[in-house]
Image (tube, rainbow, N blue to C red; front, side):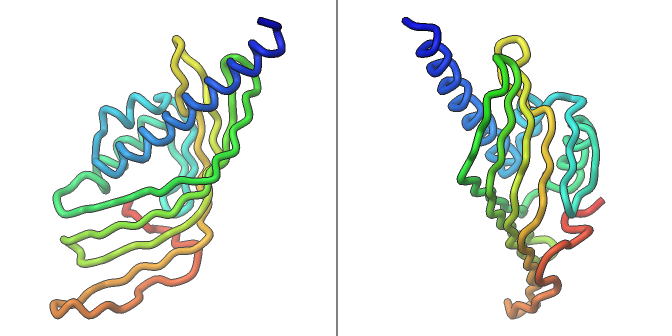
Length: 166
């Protein structure tokens, strides 16, 4: 096999591995699976999420545990349109569009949000990990539901600074 063909094959395999990594990460957040989230992120990853703040990977996992792991919370991240660039055998970057929806039975609130992720990835001991994530909102909509199930918008537009607790 030629060097160019081998490099193209390696890049394709890396891109597939990174797509799987991001899917595992989002599924783990949605399913409140802290162990898998931890497995996807470097502990010292740089996380910068509009509506959440800036923190390390380890701090982000604590944030998810406090705010995203409770009975009656149903989340779904729908990521799409990935553009992944392989920068070296152990380094890559990617951008993703995402639509997020959440139902919180305790607070009787729903969230619909869209935005994009700009990620950096590192290959550590043969496995790709998320080294950095920057998320920016495109749109944000929160509804609260009264005891009769009637909704009212409590946040609408973009740039909610405290979307998911502290």
